[in-house]
Image 1 (cartoon, one colour):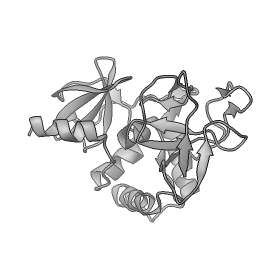
Image 2: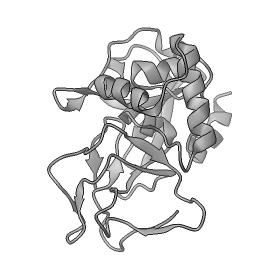
Image 3: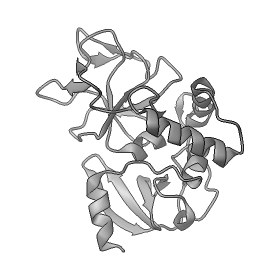
Image 4: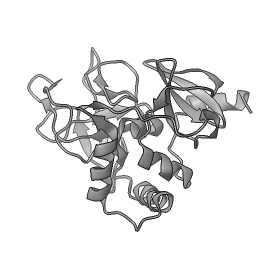
Length: 219
């Protein structure tokens, strides 16, 4: 699919690592959805922030499909800065447009949890219980030193969201990644525990190119 965004002010369709859907100018590497949560007449969100337990991370380009953002009563196109942010928000790879990555994720999930390969609805049910608490983002208690967390895990540290890579914590902002610090004490995990186990088992989320390039300064 190829997505055409409305011109002018940003729509409220960017997803933060806390799972909030906000109106910021930050562009995204991935699109995705949680069902229909917008009014196509006004291109604004409804009160609810999900209509399905299947929270997906999709490719912005798939075959020759073309979609105008929030133009019809189909799924609401959301955007993620990179896959680490999407996973932290509680989404998982789509089995349609990102089939191979979804299969990699499912295999790593099974390996990390010591279970059989789960069906997509089973993934969604578990993630729904891990990503939310009383309707809001659930921040999980730390379960390992930050420097030992698998690459692509996102944590809450000093009130901000950070992506862990090679023992360094990279701060996410509404303008992109902004500097790095040695990963130390942190308040909690933004990435759901089941997803983090998949990361420990070898799944590697696709990180923003700016972070990948900047990592060279820290090696």
